[in-house]
Image (cartoon, rainbow, N blue to C red):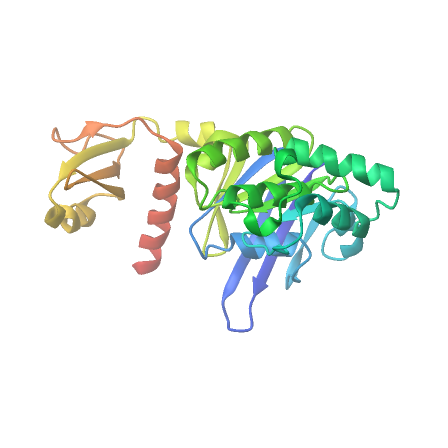
Length: 295
């Protein structure tokens, strides 16, 4: 099964065009959607999750028209938004049982088995009877995935799932998403480059509502191999380098500024070659886009 998106557009009442002719083919597995805050990622996710209507275009999942057959979509959809509320005084096991009942799992014994399986899969079984209000951020995220998996969904959408998680929780969440992605379409929307690099075989970069690049993370990184150069400079020199070279990113280290430059050849012998990574791909696309707009 494949998710196909064609010429999708969305403009809000305040005049902001959040999606501009978005075209994507998303196969089974983990698909990364990368972009800065306000790029249009959440607008696309909300549209696919049937929470808002697109102005034009199409989105189909197999034979299902996502924009028209919303009830069918909701039956096979698992959705974890960037922010979601919980009933703080209800235990995880009771809340999942209630959600499973709402999703049509009417047999009590089947529901009990399903809830136990999901709590085990998300490593929450030991805290199943604790109220959700006592859960850490990472535990709440794992509970969010547990509820998203009810009903054996064929499409799972997770929006900024690792934002705010500590390193241990982030690794645990990565492992869980990888396991889920073996048999399902999982769309991971994030601005964290490492999440995409570690998890996804396919990805797209979206900025200002438009898809600016798509492909395999490894192939995209290979395309700029040998073209990334770095140099340590003084902070006050930065604007001069930006005026003469394509500076794609800057990092502070020990009070010094490290710049990464995209260039076919070594700018001069004061620059050294830097191994290309997905972060360089991302920043090269975002900065070139912003520079084109500012001209």
